[in-house]
Length: 446
Image (cartoon, rainbow, N blue to C red):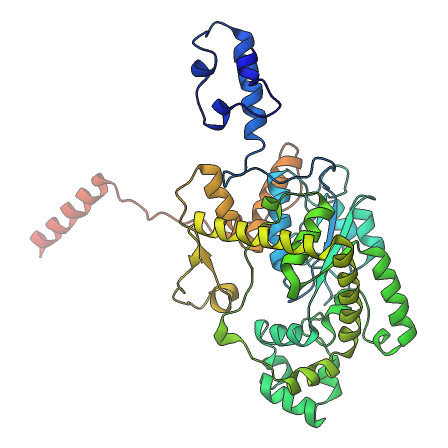
């Protein structure tokens, strides 16, 4: 047995090289103790190996956190973070708060905040009514979210430079129809003060518009004019969120996220999601940036507050340590890019029902020849949020509610929306012969 244990705390060489049981046990196949010891060691070794073939860099002194709230802000790189959380939830069988349809957990057009009762009675809800992850779009409502999540949940979100948020939102959601002006024309109006207040203070679809980040964090437009309300809101947000990431410093944010959640490099590995193609971007001058910052002045105050807080967290983490971990994370990302054979997908021919993501956003394709687990890992890296949401709907529905007589209508699935095709009526051979005889007899009569 000493040969099997390898004589040290490390895994023996025959496990790392993938040698067989016969080799390690020197042909003693009838020794059941040897066989069981081999299986235990092999399982322990495989559990420490990532799909890329390297060791998992998980700190042994902490336990991975599995209760999390992610406030998904608009156009702040939140889809990139959401891909990380989707993958972790899917592979660890964690429940995610899922909308019955679409990607929003609330309905601002009807004045509804987070739908607590519907999410608890949802066909995708666990029996406890509390979810491990809440990571879809919703306005911040702390009390409502606390009713759906666990008390020890980690709260995180992400912010971005306000002028970049508005520029990205304007083009992605095609707000030129809503504002009645192109982006450059809107800037000209803002600089000259010709714009109407009615249009500027309204929100597209009841949720998109001016000072978007502060609105996502639960503040109403009338609250933004009161400095006392803003200061109190910043204190509450500072107390609520454990980590507020910066989109401009994504790699540093991922390092802090990894250590906060006690996850591995593989868990936080991600490729940028929802990145617009260059031809759909507007490059801003200094004057344009200043104009948009004046237009989104409340977002500027929030962003500067959380940027200072982020700098303090990086200082506490250690600058040199941060540089080393960021370099390691980038090298690992480049390695997985090569191993997965990733490249930008060629644009498809756009039809009348083509999706916005295919038209405006960079898509990736994977060409991997590795193991089955490695191929699935690579495909999950480029999977969209809509696809993950649909996969989790089926998984959680079958896990929690498939075994009972559920009264819910699952018409959200495209499988149930398809109308059954009617097969053409087949004429039997006998009827065909009768028709031919009748035609033949009619010819003779004529």
